[in-house]
Length: 447
Image (cartoon, rainbow, N blue to C red; front, side):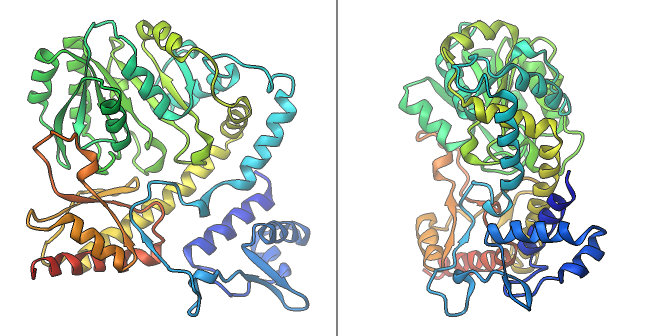
């Protein structure tokens, strides 16, 4: 990584974390060069790029200063929201400069191929790179079994519509589960049933009974950093689910779209425990780079490959995006950015846990045990009116999401909770937001 890119990234991170406050003067060019052990011209280049990004500004004969954002000024007109609802990545950590470099490199490298229709499986060099990349997560597969998709969502939709070798038609989903996918299944009229998953896990005996008796085509699951619970399956649960899939000829679709957003090490996915090819492994790159990138990968068992490719029909993901991602991963930039964003999100989760410890003294919120990822479940007393609570919090500029949308309409075994996301909540806002939530829960008992 070029020295000025490292300096640029480091200063951006310090601004985000508040080490360099808005309006604060940055170290002089000479002081920064001494601190980073580089030439003055390298610092000038990094500062110039920060100016282009409107992160800092210069005053002649004075120096460089951190830009003051209007919405954060005491007299600013912009309303300052505490966003616990958004699942989008924090735009302050988007790797703009690195990815711009990769785009340019991709154009130079693949200029004769970028304007063709491409292969429906995806760019071959990217698939080779993905094979090595996924092996780091214990997802070992030859290149022919890896398909590049337009995000994980496209793969989920294809899998729902296509026939499976077991001849079954019902999709089993955790309850609660990914709200957008639930809506898709219901809109398409695809047979679906649910099984309860809580912050403590899943009833494996109930899962076995459903695999055995309910004509399950596949079981859709998020094995780690679950949306909306934020929790992960234990190794024993993952191993058992893999074994049940083999035993009853039921497929598992493992949506590991949050894989890169946690600090947890040595996590073997369900895929790693299955030796009879009953697990489809899905990976997304949108959460860690840019949502608009819309790139994902599906690792498919041999028996599903031909049907999946038939339903996918043609190449529908940008070759330029694929080529840029290939450069981004292979150069090591992806891994560096992953560590950066994991560190930042883990710090926010710690802040969230600390705020709960401070303000939740009466135990009104039953919080899931989460230390990585971006989500946490705030389980509430049954007497709380969710809709009223959300409106009151919105009036205080605290935006949250209720549990309602994460369940099938006719599913009765529901928990009442708020899904808290820290991906867009700034560190200095988190404690204030948690305090507001607890205050409004207390108020609800007065009504």
